[in-house]
Image 1: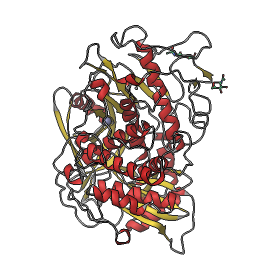
Image 2: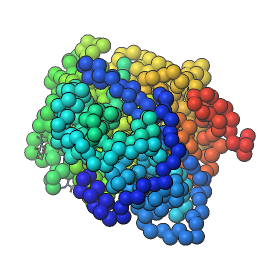
Image 3: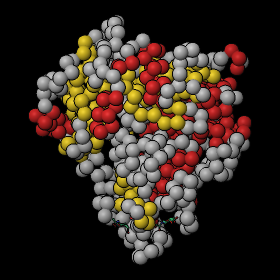
Image 4: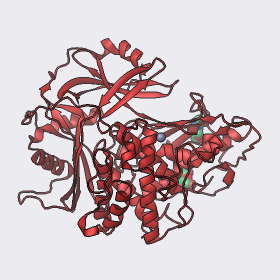
Length: 596
Ligand SMILES: *[C@@H]1O[C@H](CO)[C@@H](O)[C@H](O)[C@H]1NC(C)=O
Ligand SMILES: *[C@@H]1O[C@H](CO)[C@@H](O)[C@H](O)[C@H]1NC(C)=O
Ligand SMILES: [Zn+2]
């Protein structure tokens, strides 16, 4: 990251302050911009702030001015953003981007005196050189801190480490501006603080003039929960021996290739699955890649071959997700997780670290998503309600839920892992994770209510308050339900239920394909759904709201399908309160006039 940063800074012309005007009043707490967190054993409290994102979608796209000459993604994005926001192009820094058959995506950030803003970013998508979406959280600060630090981060590190109950992890630090809720911009040292024992991983934003801890990025998404072929839900559905399940397009060297050779253990280019330490993998004797372990439910998870069955399933599921998500756009250039990126773009060196039966917790699981180039870490825990205990690694929906955190955090905002940090966007993060778990487990066009985590909890109701359902009796929750909720998992339930309804409508309209995991070309509803799901992530702005995430789905449909599903999508969203005029958690059931 630092090397690339230096390069960009020296290529770009320097340093003029954008036309800065209107003062922004101090922002009150809002789901869309704030998140209150209580951290560590001592209960340290911090409220993080991200400026609101605007988001515009342009259907068929904006015709560019006659003077517009396509000059590469970097130039096109900076030209568009600076003219749209009426700021000098030197204040717009290209950060990342990637192209798919449907759109070119660029992620930029605001810059002042050569120093980038952490939380003032913009994203623009082009289709055939026309702009189709634009999201921005650029700010006009009332006051900008001097760009020369007066405090060395090392001098305050012990204090920061104590507050966050962790240690600096030696990841290179950076100097970035941070937009504050009072309308000012602070200069901050950005330092990663990790605690392996309690499984925390933060970016600390330390004021470079006062030494004060101003904000954090929390890379970990916890699940508050109450794996087998990926279509199966849990151990009760039965383990099967699958032969060569890897997808040769997504993983061209298979699942075991790493460091120039094939392993005979649960480590490879996409993931290493282990217990305790990374040396504790499941290994076969010479040249054998048959991981054939039975699970004895009469024994505890860590006993006998149960642990090998757990590592094997966890290894399989993470790889399986890697492979199908790749087919739908979560590629090297799209900021995915791989040790070797085969020179196909993005940053390498970041396969998933999958810790099974992790000893740092029970009755849960989590996934920490750092930026592209640093490994995502998934921790699966033992569940203690039953005797013997049950293992989260034998419930596929939990693993899929966790891995989807990696996908959504990387695809939203261009690989920074900083763009699902508010209560509202973090809540949708939980929702996408539940919805993806549900999508992978479908076996036919029959739409059933969906419950997550019922095996590990031995509770038919699972770990959410209600099943996901098309029935308003079974699940009456709407957009307005979000108001007053502070738990990201509760907020996530509303979004996951909206997506359950979108899925049901698309499958009712277009039927269901049994080969959706490997064939993204089909016209069936489950394929259309997952295309829009993934496409929309890359289009939506940093820290999106529910209406913005909805708009990204509708635009994704224009980009990929020419908008044929516009009214279908609007009707479903509107049926759950996310109609045209939905705002501030007030339901609206209206649809565009041409959809009536
Ligand atoms: C590694 O395994 C893959 C998948 O089975 C195979 O295609 C590839 O040839 C192997 N590579 C080496 C170097 O053995
Ligand atoms: C897994 O296998 C590879 C290749 O044989 C080996 O280099 C690596 O050390 C093994 N990993 C562990 C943790 O044993
Ligand atoms: Zn989660």
